[in-house]
Image (cartoon, rainbow, N blue to C red):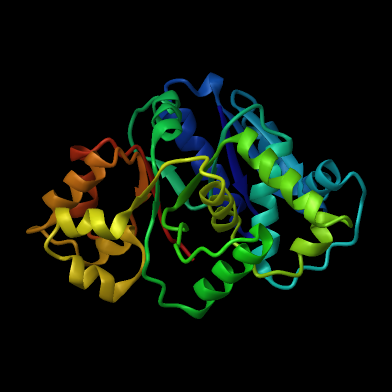
Length: 291
C-alpha cells in the first residue's frame, strides 16, 4: 500500500508529525510505503527523515526523477504557477509506486488506531464524488484546461476531498493518452497549464466510463437540512464543517459513515465536535490546516 505526500522544506515538521502518528496508530504499518515527493535542491533535507524513521518504509523521490521516468529525458522545469508543480508531483508518482496509491498533503495526522488496508479496500469500489456548483474563477479555468487535455466537455468538479485515490493502471492509461496527443514532452505541455491533477484524472475516467460517479449535491439534498447553507459556502461537501454545531453534528457523522469516509478535514471546528466525529465515525486520519 502506497501513500504519496508531495512536500517541501517548510512542511518538513508536518511530515515528521504524520510519520510519528503512523508509527503510533497504523496497525499494519509494515505493509505501508510512504513516498515523500520533493524537489532536487531539498533532497538532502528529506533524506534525514528516512534515516530518522528506519522502522517505517519511507522513500524520498525528486520531482525531477519522476519527470525523467515519465518523459524519458531531463528537462528544465519552468512552471506557470504552483498548481502544475504540485500536480505533477502527485500524478507522476504512479511511476514509483507499487500499485494503487493515496495522495495526501502534509497537514495530516492519524487520530486513532486503524488498519490502512481498510482504507484502501474501501477506495477501490467507491464511486467518485463530484458536484455541479463551481463558484471560483480557478475552478472554471481548471475544468476548461482538463477538458482541452482530454478532448471532452465536462462541467463537473471532482476536487472535493483532502486526499486523492489513484489506481495506477488508470493513471498509466491517462498518461499514455496524453503522450499520444502531445508528441513532444508531456511535461513541457503540462507545466504551462493551471492544472489540478485529480480533476484531470477524473475527467479522463468520466469520458471513458472507467469508474462510477456520484453527485454529492443530490446526495446531500436527501440527507441534510442545511444543504442551502452548504451551497452558499462552497462547492465542497466537506466544508459543511464550518456550520457544524451540536444540533447537526449527528447528521454530519451519519453522512461520513454512509459514505465510508476514513480521511476527512478536522480543522475549523471546536475540539468537542472534532472529538465527537472521531469517536462516532470510522475517521482515522484527519486533515488540518496549520498555515
